[in-house]
Length: 120
Image 1 (tube, one colour):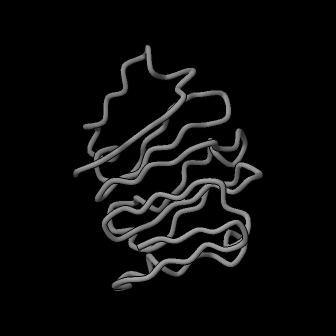
Image 2 (cartoon, one colour):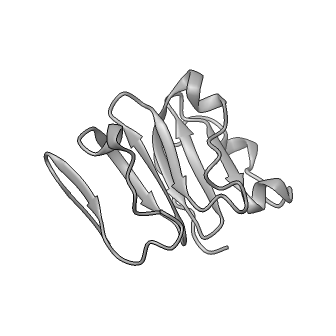
């Protein structure tokens, strides 16, 4: 479970892979958060995207693209995550990305306003 009030972000529940251990730099500065099965991701107000918890399928390895462009949104599935950069481009990583199963149609590669990722 995730709770967020204007000055604090906290998670509670089973913490088998440290998915609830929010990085200290995000506790009071989080714009958006997404919880996967055993990993979590968040975007700070400054556009910094961070993921933590399980990294078995590289679902917590944020692509370098987001370090330069910044992010405005993230969505986590069971074993993958997808983010929207500040320009509206979409990038996914984790299990489906490494198996080349994620195909994002070119019409969605720019100017995306919202993203949801679910399932496996």
